[in-house]
Amino acid sequence: MSAVDPAKRTIALDVDDTLANLRDPIAAMISRELAVDVDWRHWTDYVIHERFKLPLARFLTLLIEHEVLEHIALEPDARDSVEQLRAMGYRIEAWTARQFHPRAREITAHTLAPLGIGANDIVLFGQGESKATLLAERADVAFLVDDNAGHLAATGHGASDRTVLMDRPWNRGVAARRVHCMADVPILAEELR
Image (tube, rainbow, N blue to C red):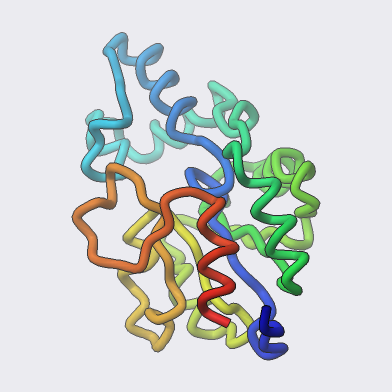
């Protein structure tokens, strides 16, 4: 096992549908709210509010009112994967586009506490803010894993070689380096050292 490059000792992991399962609670919320049968396995994009003809502001309000973020569960292999990455010498940051929620940091820290990811390790992004831009600015980040191809598509800032797509139905049409589950991330980290 080779040593971690001290200049690239951080791995950034998206929260929703990378570290934790947001897809099931969102599908359940939409099913309840719109009285329709929803199965995320058939989503070909992740612009959910448009898919269900909801204005973005209404969709975000529903996420808050239904306490969707408060009820997500960690992906089954998230804990072991984060522990392996730390054992390899990496620092973990959680990058998430949850700034719309007034309690985003608190809720996210609570969800990620079993992984040892605290409030100071969480980077919140607002609507329209680019993870790719921050990645390009952060030379210490070895790579970013995200399920949203939109966050990775904007990596023309010299960071595209440091992006990894978490394979999900809504991003299958995008050509990118992929992992299929969190258990693949430590394997990839080892390959990229």
